[in-house]
Amino acid sequence: MASHIGRRKLLATLGGAAATWQFAARAQQPSKVWRIGMLETISSAQNAPQLDAFRQRLQQLGYVEGINFVIEYRSAEGRGDRFPPLVAELIQRNVDLLVLRGTPAAIAVKNATSTIPVVMTAVGDPLLLVASLSRPGGNFTGLSSFVVDLEAKRLELLKEIYPQAARVAALRNMGNPAVQNNWKEVEIAAQLLGIRAQFFDVRKTEDISLAFENAIKNHCNALLADQDALTQANKELIVSLAAKHRLPAIYAARDYAAAGGLMSFGVDYPDLYRRAATYVDKIVKGAKPADLPVEQPTKFELVINQKTAKALGLTVPPMLLARADEVIE
Image 1 (cartoon, rainbow, N blue to C red):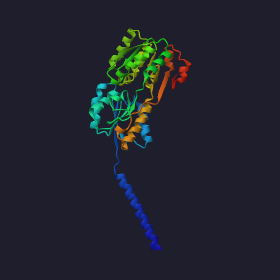
Image 2: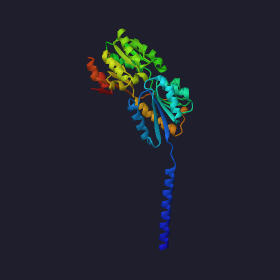
Image 3: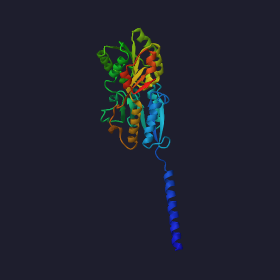
């Protein structure tokens, strides 16, 4: 009996030791750490809401930063000419995949690599980059930020909050192919509303103040500001100049209204970044970008800054306030 018990103890001990050895062996085997290159238009601090959404979704999918993925973040700081060297830097860092925002960034990547998987978080004209939305066909997939009639809707909202809008200054970076392609939509929508839209080309920070001066000289009495790397990086300047010249303005993203802009209507960008994280997960698990359809936005948000409206002497129609997703007091 004693020897039988002894053998059982010995087997239990050996079994426990074997399990310990197996655990130690697994622990010593390095797991893959995915190096994600992020090519962005603005700094990580300015981009915090989107980055938080991206990281949170990856965490929900089982990823732990520093354990099985790291982010190599690079920002062009609003300057489109910085994208090509930043792409080269990320490729040198041996990133496993690239996550990017904006058509200029995407074009810079397309010119640099056809092999590294690419996830677009928000691109104005994805058809410049993929064969089709349903079958991208190359190393690009992800999300578009373009929606038909979005510019028309912004002009309608601007007219609703400020019926006197007659000549609208439209800040546009015409060096961005995606911006060039949607200008006709703005002109058509403005004509239907009895508004004259005049575009002011801004390609560098120094152009912005001059654009406002010219807009005032041309008797513009309202502002439509586009979403682009340059305008993103200079949103505080644009908002302050609109306030200085007392121009009621509508912007393409919530960030501007949060910075003091009158109102914004556009894509919910944190939602796009959450969805982009799901694309990253699929690619990590073996999916090819060529087989993952490019998706369009499904969530939009209207934000009204009531404090700015009062400063401009505007009374926001109650029905418009009721439709807002957020009212900043």
